[in-house]
Length: 334
Picture 1 (cartoon, rainbow, N blue to C red):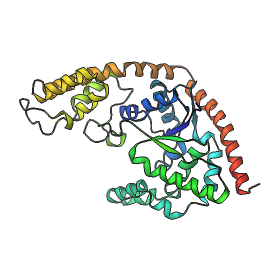
Picture 2: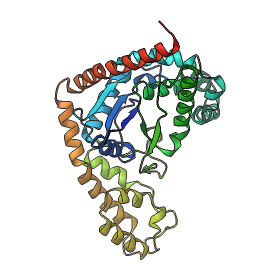
Picture 3: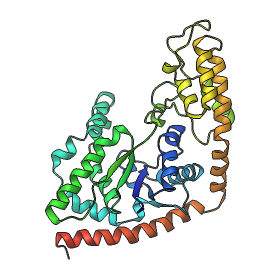
Picture 4: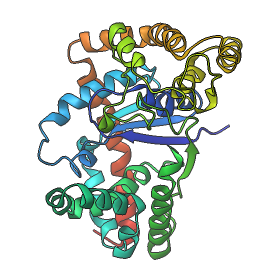
């Protein structure tokens, strides 16, 4: 059976939290065992919203890739590379930008949502972020996928409109210049929303995250202040685990038999929220311990991560260059 080519990437914003672990990295690890997998550091994309502090990108890249390796993403099985070291992305981005209608980009739901939120919060930030790069990032995102002719892309449900736009761009290119690129299809992540300590979706920007690299005492502290069942004001009241962020995290790591007992005890008020948090702390600390150890090992090996990215980018560039040449020929470019 022919392997499917799967591609995904992340913007380097620093250390990753358990939302990334359960939302993407565990899926990536499974996919690398079955398919031809490409995982890249989207450092150019990081500039779209953080162009004032580009010096942080390299440090954030090392932290992020350390978390990838800790989660089992293996450079011997997956191609791990840095977007900005593969210059062919930039040229194909330029060529595609000539054929993508402005209206396609302006209707991007993420673009509209971010601008709307910023307009309410800060008029100066709203004006600052309205750049060509931010408006046109879906074109670069499309290039990231198709320059390797990737067939599948792991995404959350909220990212499906982005992938549909990529398919529209591919269809337009193929219509104008002949069949060149496949239309990428989604692989939906298993856990699209991992709750943070305040009950909202776990996010660094919300300051509600539990990080893969957090030490045991920090995990205890964060879990101890987690929001719990809003319909259970008193210890003697029966709980509603289906509405509790603490139980939601339990469901990710606690064995099924224990989870069922926990659910039963919560509903009968046999245990309180404090007990449930204590159980979760112990489970999370034990679960994350091997990840922390692998992370430390990767960081302790001098220049290891940088070497992985340089070698991966070299291999990626060979493939990207060949596919860019094909696109140029189809367009009739010299």
